[in-house]
Length: 482
Ligand code: FES
Ligand SMILES: [Fe+2]
Image (cartoon, rainbow, N blue to C red):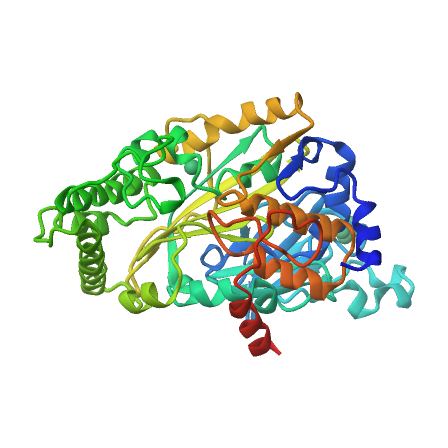
């Protein structure tokens, strides 16, 4: 790392100097929050909406991030994004979702109008203005960069940011292979958590919490890796199962996971998996699990195709792509992929100690299927019993973790499985330090490496305990992108 990079990082308040320890003030300090507002959010691609929210010409949504508001609108020429402000005297034009119809966006103050392409179509009493201030380009809505991936519109306020696809890195290919762009909503909920946005995200970046937070899942855990030993400290609840016990546990795991998420594992998939509980398997539990998974993927795919779902080649994709139960997309978006369904999270800061947390349950629906697309999330209290069990369990920790952090200088991470937390926090430091785009893009690719990652060398900042990322994969991608 050069001295210039080190000097820039050194100016970041509460910067991370030890990759395994995170300063607590990053989660509530006003100056840190302001630094994120100034240096992070204006420079990153942000998932602004799902495209199915705006199916018709004229449909729009308002995407807000802190004090910034963007209109994402479907025009005749496709979906565009504009700063949500009247070009006369600044009134916010869109408030929530809607359709701008034949009249377009009408400013309620003095009645200026814009069509869905953002073109200013009407100025009341033009002659009372100097001609120069009504230059057409200056009174059309101000465009914001927009790009599309996985059925979503992403916006970026930075004109110089690299293209979305290049920023996402290999994760985009991994999820494209699973037809992420064909997913459609099943349900959409939101809540306000009394928690810093980063803390909320971190609850979904590791599986280490499953044993305590989701005991119903841990109880049917099988295939615990060598990392934790056969039993030892309680990580592996079912050591040495017989072959049929192992299959039974796996069936229960998928069943409970799908029920607890009310999604991610489609009801029809759970049904298919339940039918395999008594399948014939050889005595070796590892071989048995392998055969069970093969059969499950095959049967799930066949069943989904029969339903008319736009399926991918499940066996091939699972063989080629390393499976991650949660795929994190920096800075504030998640996809939790399985087979013909996924869950998806987006977490936005509201204040230093509150955030807006949204969950979508997504499914690969048959083309042309008639269904009701929610246009707004159902907003619930975070402790509402209407949230599915698993997110409710996750939410229960967060407000008390936020409180606890006020009584601590720093917290510690497991270098082997809580690395994503350190990796993305160090990337935030890179943005706050204003590091070069090449470095940030490379770090984005490392950070977008999914659930349970180890602490990795992201290319700058402290690397104690860090392992190199899967660099060949990233290098190949970078080469392909050039
Ligand atoms: S402020 Fe919008 S028309 Fe005047
Ligand atoms: Fe969880």
